[in-house]
Image (tube, rainbow, N blue to C red; front, side, top):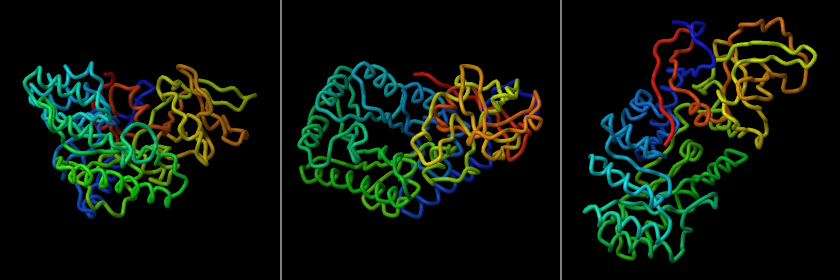
Length: 377
């Protein structure tokens, strides 16, 4: 099968690029002496995750309990659910543990720790938890030095039904860094925050076997991970335009794209119309805050080679509007009706979530396989 045999829009994944991206991260972290717990929220596919787990201990990070169910069904038991636990999800967590999942939750407050302990007691089990640390003011977590850290730790360690497994953080503010130097500094800030919190717990006589950090930018640029036991990252497998805008990857490292077909022209507006709108590309506009705004995606030919200055400038639900980023004229004769184009996404997670499978290529237009993926909660 060729890409031209597919109905569009369709999600395309370049196997060679994925394998190179995975190998680069694996080798980098190996040199720093830590293991990788891949975040599978982007992939949502056992075929992709098997590639990512090669040479790793075998644990994964998930962002939904549906992901936990899916990967448990495929034989992966060591699972970190890395979203602050809601009490209404604890029944589901307990059920997964009964099915054989070694699933750990995260939390950043005493009330959540007490809810975990109560659920564990009711189910006759200890539910393990990591305390989330706020290393950058980006989102959730306990600030280093806050008294809350030990309060949460004592609940998890001393109350029946819970178990304190350690600390974790996510340097989400690394996505807002403006230079490689800033990402390097953020990586050290992330490391220092959790290592300090781990030391505080241990000084108080509390266990802290796991010290977990992770974001693709900080994982890529970290130079020192002393005191860290594992790194979590996910989008590094695929990369996207936001990562390219941060300098974390090159455009030709981006492994995922959306195949679209030219369905019309608007000559007076210098527009090319495709059948890939925001339902296929997502509404993510993450590059709008960066030095180069890539609209809703960067336009490539069917081989995946970027076409200079063409971006998806606007979208409707099922229509993509391609224009010159500088407002210049387009030679529409180069793009007759039926032309296949590939769109590199701003945010690989959001774009992949719009599609039921990956159509696998390896540097060309031959489709080698279709790898199923899932979505939802």
